[in-house]
Image (cartoon, rainbow, N blue to C red):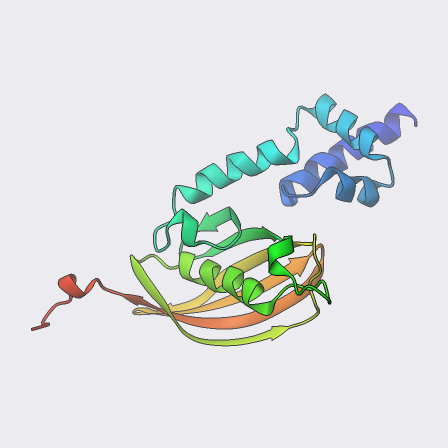
Length: 193
C-alpha cells in the first residue's frame, strides 16, 4: 500500500474512532477492507488505545454522573451519559440470557437494558417508568453485542419522554418510546401530612 493511501486511511480511521469509539478492530478492518493486524498497527502508529482502554476512559466519566440508579442496577455497560440529554449502554449477550433451543436472547434482557437507560437519563434520585411503546425488530443471538442509545426528546415538570433505539452493529433490534416520571423522596414532598 502506498504512503498516500495509508495516510488517508489514518485520517479516516481517526475520524471513525472519534465518531464511534466502541468500534472493534474487527469492525474497523471490515469497514476499511484491511486485516485486523493492519488496523492494530494503524492504531499503534496513531497512538489510539485499544477498545478496552477507550471503553474504560469513557465509562469512568459516564458512571461519575449516574444519579437515579446504582451502578449495579444498570443493565449493560454505560458508555456515555449526559443526564437530561442522551446516553448509551452496551450489553453482550451471554449464555444465561438466551433460550436454550433457539439461542436467542430472552426479551426481558433487552427491555431491561433499554428501561434502565431511560431511568438513568433523568436527573432525579427516584425515577419510575410510566409507559412504554416498544417493538422488537429482530431476534438477538448469543454472543451479539447490543448498543442501546437513549435520547430525552421532551420533558415537562417531572415527566420525561425518551426515545430508545437498540442496535447490533448498524441493525435496529429494539425501538421504543418511554415516558418516565421523576419522584421526590417522600420525606421531601411539600405539603404532605
